[in-house]
Image (cartoon, rainbow, N blue to C red; front, side, top):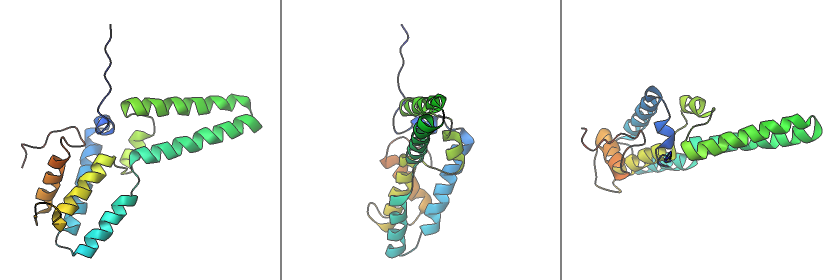
Length: 164
């Protein structure tokens, strides 16, 4: 009997993203945190507010899939019934994404810089550490490392607890 296990919800997208893209996303997150090191509380609060509104890769995928499914249903009704198949195909890929973290648009979205919710939370936690919400630090790299440790294994699936 074949035993199939689903990947962890928190890392399923990053596990199916190529290492180079994951590194680019992490490096950009690190630059974001470094940019706000030493800034005032108000500036940090504004960035945290921006992060509250950042679309993660799942939200972008769900919005795009919903638009395509609805468009396929409308076109299927008024243009050609065969277009209904497109809605079914997109719905199928949405199910595959929910189970595995992969769908055809995901590599494109990741290359465009869409992060997972866990990756956004890493930046949020690092900024909150810089702001002094937790153990104070003025080192952006340490703040990001502490944030990564706070959420467990990193969003890339790699355990960074023994790295400096």
